[in-house]
Image 1 (cartoon, rainbow, N blue to C red):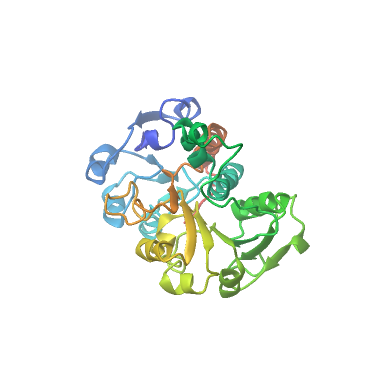
Image 2 (cartoon, one colour):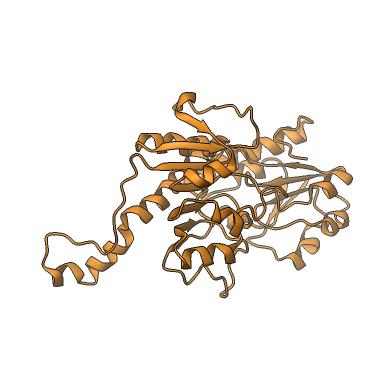
Length: 323
């Protein structure tokens, strides 16, 4: 079968190999592909592998040979699933490959906000410590995590791993999940340690809110002015899930008036962001370029799962199908 990878750079900028997938057929690898280039590059493909390249309805309908779309990430909102199903195209994703990496990154962001490590490192190297001649100094209040309340929105595998790390810091964990029968799979979490609340209750009680929900019609722009107004004054918001969960103009306004103390965002509504994004110039934000998932170990797992997804499809046994 003819395999085309449209945006290899998003997954592996040269440090990982495609050896396993190359065993399954002829593969043409593009480092990146604009929307205008998709049809030309994919017109003869039986199989498309994508990470960030969007496949809209018209594009899918134009690819007459296409039988399989392998989304090389957990989130799959870049594919029009209805159009894929209507054209008998199977779509798969990569579950669970980055659970530990993303949860670890949540705390990298949170600790940067509470301890100001990067800022004080820069100050010392700029000569501030030498000039002050004090044993120590700090320009911002440093915050201890113990006994702080972490509200987790979306209690799947990543949310649960984040909760386990929070408990190890002595934080209180509260959670909201739309599935009232959500199963706790993380072996380090005792059910009685997690208090499940309504979204409104979580907003009002959390010192820190971490988003771990998928992007769909019910979650898009869920963090807006109305939601923020229900939150505890001085809340910290962390988003490593999907950018469009947040109305960025509303968050920027809340940061400006200090309703929100700080925000750490690994994802934005538009990626890369426009210069006009109101969050870019805020001194109360940490923004990273969608890298929570991107440890080398996680990407190696991703490539292995992608290989098995495709191999099973070729053998007539579909796994990790999302449509």
